[in-house]
Image 1 (cartoon, one colour):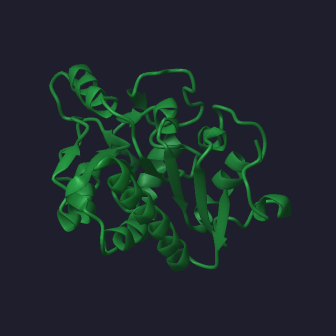
Image 2 (tube, rainbow, N blue to C red; image 1 turned 90 degrees about the horizontal axis):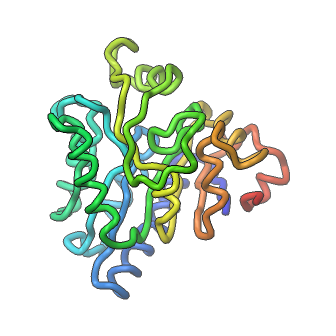
Amino acid sequence: MVRIFPNPESLARAAAEQAAAAIKKAIAELGRCRIILATGTSQFAFLEKLTATPGIEWKKVEAFHLDEYVGLPITHPASFRKILLDRVIDKAGITKYFFIPAEASDLSAGVRGVSAQLTSAPIDVAFVGIGENGHIAFNDPPADFETEEPYIIVELDEPCRGQQVGEGWFSDISQVPRRAVSMSPRQIMKAREIVAVVPDRRKAPAVKLCLEGDVRPEAPASILRTHPNATLYLDEESAALLSPAMRAGGFSR
């Protein structure tokens, strides 16, 4: 489903309402909720509204994140672990969370460990974004749509690294790490529900690329169209390049 809102504020509010309902439903039915969190700047308004939503039993939530730069210290402002701690975990009071050990001396072993935690039980809801190059998590084009590995070590392409500079996390591209640990596309698709939050004019080309045309590795986020319970939240800016038919709603399959 595609939902288009007049502005980022109304988008974030509606997405947070759906996210909160999904978390509460899982806790009511299962006694806990396992979630995946995205941490880009496009997610900040959504995460703020979600953590402020009353009635969520956050101590019954188990949290994972989509990706992290290899070798970047947790104290760096761009560290996704730091962003999660500051904007979600500490604010909400989540006590059970699993970080990607991107600074581990044995990175492969660390990735296997967090992968085992991730796959130990189903994920109830995943919160994701779409990058300017169409990536989902740090799966830059062409993404690996075949691997069944939960987390993979990836090379970041120049457009992806440039986006991080444009968002102000690094002063120039030479400072942006070249590698990251990313949840794989197939693993993201295993979540029972997906809420994709994608505001901003700079995302409009990627949104069009991923929603129109074939589902393909060259448009990584196009894989969202294969999920039976995914909702894509857009604002007028990010939806600006979509065809009238697509703006009317619904993923083309």
